Length: 290
Image (cartoon, rainbow, N blue to C red; front, top):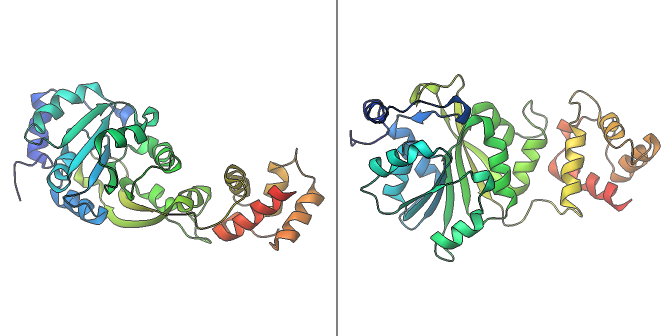
């Protein structure tokens, strides 16, 4: 292993000292200090020398460096202006990396892809995401129908469990269905908090989301489908009938909710966590047709 890589405790401390960098808690900054874990992430993501990669939140460049070694081109979005002089220094030997000073939530990612990658190139998103904003970032990237193959992200262990959860499990909920509507979700690695500087209070998982060519279900109205899923988990301990009756009180009477459940062939005494994505699609389409 090259001891001069950024992702070692010694080199990270050197960089932080040199630039007198102070971590901003509000940006969820935790830098990776284990090269083996980074190399494993890249392997799990399926990065090769022809790949284009988008990174979110490069920090001081630990993951960016390994991506630059293994991929054809890396484009990294960073919101913290203080990091740009550091990145320019730490990654100056790599000519296949470009940094964009922008909040990923406001970025036109499709345009960035057009500007930086060749048509038909396989593109992956790889990131160590800030815990406090993981879900908004991932949902934005999934809903924009980007021409990407996969997203491989280091996120809080519990959030990864929710995104990859199956029906009838404690973690299964509306987030599981939203993510799995767009992707095949798989937890590919568990990561202890000891490989970060500073150490977060939680453990992490690496979640790989492989983009589906088409959703696993046909729904008449996508927005309504997600609204109904949210309604089904409105109060987790309540039955489907109660949740739907309460959530859609202005649209449907209790009797109408019962009739629609019967029409969909779904028992209203079940809880939302017991329904598969296919059953949610049937239910949403039944409600939409009324």
